[in-house]
Image 1 (cartoon, rainbow, N blue to C red):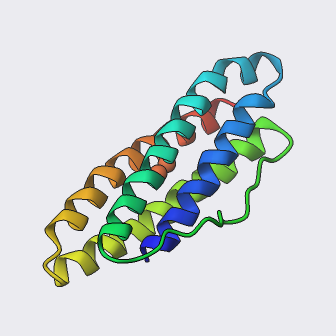
Image 2 (cartoon, rainbow, N blue to C red; image 1 turned 45 degrees about the vertical axis):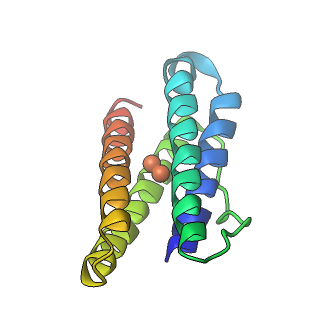
Length: 131
Ligand SMILES: [Fe+2]
Ligand SMILES: [Fe+2]
């Protein structure tokens, strides 16, 4: 489960960073900095989860999930909303599992990360209404 999370975090980190690079037009200008910020947060998530996995005796995957940069801003934002929804779903499962196993640290880590994913989801859904 932690490697699934790492693969997803690497995916969105690269995805948002390349979306940040490939911006165009007025609307693209308005969102490019936020895409960079969120990309960096996702890379930090990948790092934190990898640290935890390694501590628990696992080896972090180096393979991101398939990356979808998309061609226009609307498609990018809608793709990103889906990816954030999937992350939230997976992290709820991880929190539940960690709770059952009495793993407080993993539980706390994913609560913290999930809160940021909810912020990202909120950002992308708000942008989606305007684009
Ligand atoms: Fe993340
Ligand atoms: Fe996110």
